[in-house]
Length: 235
Image (cartoon, rainbow, N blue to C red):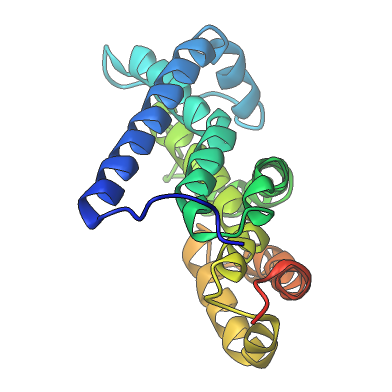
């Protein structure tokens, strides 16, 4: 049976979307304030592979602490964002399907964390070593803390986001927008898209970094096919 709920107008949908975006923003800001108290330790941790980083403006050292707090709040707020996104699409689902919120939050957080950890432990060390290998006797790197933190945070968030592929497939399958045969028949196109995404997200042109992202993404695509086959909306 379809969940008992009055039909919503387009304006009401927009109003609900705004409310949920406000909740997401408030959660991220609150978590960012909490992360601030650990920003120094986080900075020391993410710069452990760099001998020394510099700041070139009076406010940069303070600003990078704020940047770490905001990125940390955004990453820590992934469960809240996933929950709000799920609740937004729940009215279009069956009642038994709407109870899958816990699984969405758990697996969404798991895949995001796995992508971020994979980036930080596997891809970033190789990427940084590759980029720094271009220094010469006359060309020496001066790595500013603001640029470095922004680079690391973007990479971690980007990898975490692309690792959400099975969760996105679960969403689309529940809404009836994709099914397992459609995804299975689109493997060739998926490989091309995965290679393009890997080339766009990885910061270096070396083959290792791109393969390091493309291979797990393809496995996640295969997982997505099984997820949709098992949980997708039946005709």
